Length: 40
Image (tube, rainbow, N blue to C red; front, side):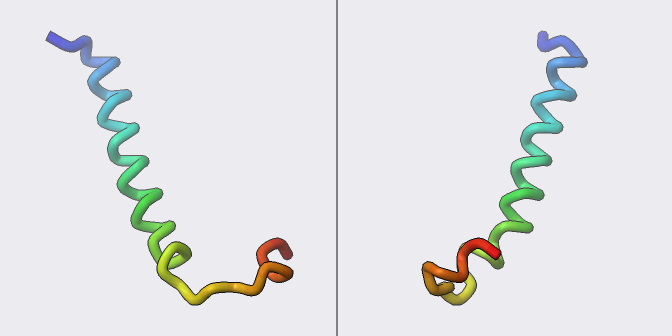
């Protein structure tokens, strides 16, 4: 049996990773930027 605190942390990591992946997807598959425009 997993401790409830550990289970909540694992669930939070999974949810955070899913949200981060969903928010980062437009950046991954968007148009390529020139090398001199990568940093503002």
